[in-house]
Image 1: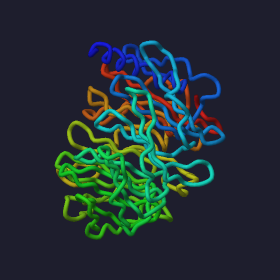
Image 2: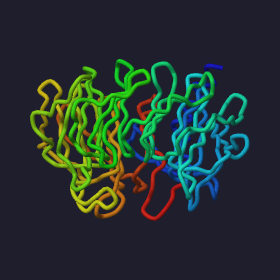
Image 3: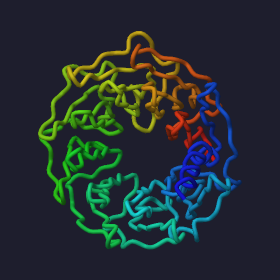
Length: 403
């Protein structure tokens, strides 16, 4: 049984998401890309969820393909076959959340059906291949966050509303709905080492709040009206919040939360930016790459190829001066490899979707080009496989939905 699960995991992560979306996989041996077969015609989608199950299969739920989708698919990497996850999901949806629970089930919550936000939730049992309803949330929402708490419950926040609520897997019910006082989406929710959850910004909110065992408390004044920022948990347990869009222009502000109060970094980001990435390096520094430095959240007019490093020992920023990325980009990914290098791929810029990929070496603070990516994509996902390869999956191409 263990061997079967292991084989599923390896095969799945190498082939599945590639098969799922028809996008390439990086083969580390020769640094080249290879295509795999896509889903059958008619199953193309974006704004769906993809969840790795304990047995190594993949559950794909909902999404959008000209209309909201109500189906769920299972991929088995051993047989290389697709199957339906029992019947159709009860309500079509996209921009929902999917959370793998400790019992191996998957919680699907909220989303949008093309007409309105949803308050419904379902739980998928992969062992028996059945769907069960969970009592509806008190508030409809989409583009929200869902955070697994230390006790296994799931905290749902935002999504264009101010109400938070908690799902209890033991009772299959929602409760503890609380008005946080702040409407949020495009915010961040970070699980802290002490089990609390730090929620920052979102759609014009200049506030930050801390969830602690059923109660919400405002942190000391955050005073940065941002969305589309990054929040990074540092080695010392503090949280670095960097950049974002402040409702008018991109922000160059960066602040650190220490569990009690906020402190501005000793210098700001050289380039104001949003839709960037922030990656914690092995040496404890944080690498920020790319992003948009002009325009608004719906229409970027200037793109960055610069990178900056935050040093938590000195609480300061420095520009990666030796080199810049070959391609400017936003809505890309930056992934830590087992060797400590950072793999940057995809995104969008003024020339369209970006097909280039490159590596950042944290020892030399320099960039290394890789072979061109066969597909130009953005809003995709990257996964580091157990053998050190990197899987790139999903995403969008301008004017198209990928399969």
